[in-house]
Length: 307
Length: 295
Image 1: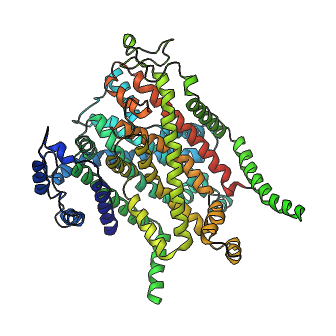
Image 2: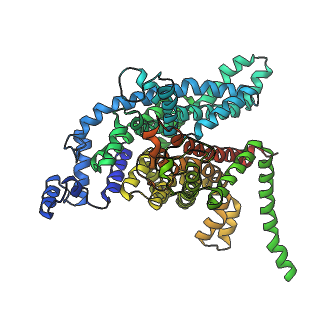
Image 3: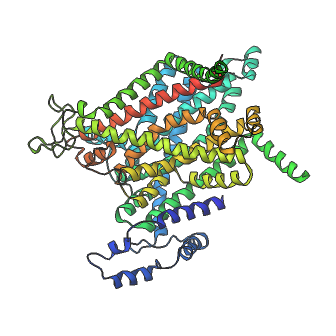
């Protein structure tokens, strides 16, 4: 967990260290003299060796939770990130809930009516869902619901209704993935022997589904939700840009436009840390829910003690 | 002597062919996979024969007919400089498709080499490679590609490179898992016993036998990469205007969406159907290669 976060920080820092050209020159406006550029670089500590800069940056994050300052606006990045993150997280969490609440039942319906029209229809929709770029879907939603019908605002933040379109656009691929995974996982389980046994002893189909099939089929789907969270967090980058939601994603895009390297670097690392934390929670939940994983961990520890 | 040699030379060939035919026959029974394949093939032909398909050159401006709605003359309308949208989509398919195929090819190839080494050697090599992949994968894919593109700058080849690097972890993980599955097979022991070199064993024996899962997921990820490439151009990295790449066309039409929605709609529809076709084919391929369905 901590090695991974450290690794991500070092990796992103190193990739962006190799940025060609001199962003500082752009900062100083029209025609800076070489002396001005040098002075600015010295002041920002950009003339220090790679390891010193990396060490300072990592130390700031680890010990003070400080991502440094924006190169362009000279404002602290951390407070910006913390102020913006709730909006990004709101979108991601609503999308995740939509994914679970809509995607899972679709997958179950599809698997239960295998090859029936319900299956065909939901898999047809799901196939479109995973094939549509979310930014294009977002624009189409704006076109239909904001421009044509005038029902929902296309831009900005305010009440809940400002979040409806962004969430639909960002969640749609996730819903589709969830439905597909649930279906294939459930189909796998339905073939197992214990389902046949349950049928043989005369259990009703509904009870079989609720008691035996679903608990086993939904376990692997939990990991999909964790991975999907990464996609949702990353997806907010374009979605926030299109809908003008001042979250971390829009901050990142703005940083790219301004060549504000520290903003880009810190936003990416911040989102990656958030993603890693969520993955950790999912793993813990998984171990908590699945008795087999718990048993395996316990077994491992015992084996280690013997060795 | 000669007879023996030809028989020996032919036997493995026949066997490989039959495997391919079995899979192809199973694929051809799956109607959605066939549709996907046909649509993808049509798109590839469209890209190759772009000069014949497109009614206008991609950069031809017609300032007397800017922002025209779709009509008989311009079936998908024109943009703010009077360029024919359909022609630009046809030309743009060259960029979008080649980025998709090449990035997956390069990323998967590199990933497979890493994955095969990790799986085959195990121990420290495995640890180092897999920890590196852990770090790469803990950055959500799109963000990693964005970061690399920021450094490399825009343009076709830089985008291709960024997307290829983003694809390495997937190929690596899948190959490693598959290699671990064949690691202790007897034919590898046989190859070692006749003194085949390690690179030869990996390239000739290990990789071909652990190729199926990688093939399926790389087919599926071509679509993903095409969407990511479009997204990169959309946020201003990636391939830039005036290159008629689909994502940059959507990005260019975005500000005019109220007045000329066709500038945004049609490139997106093409992205969607391209990705859809590749996903349908990939789904069919997975079912066809799934050993559980083998009778």
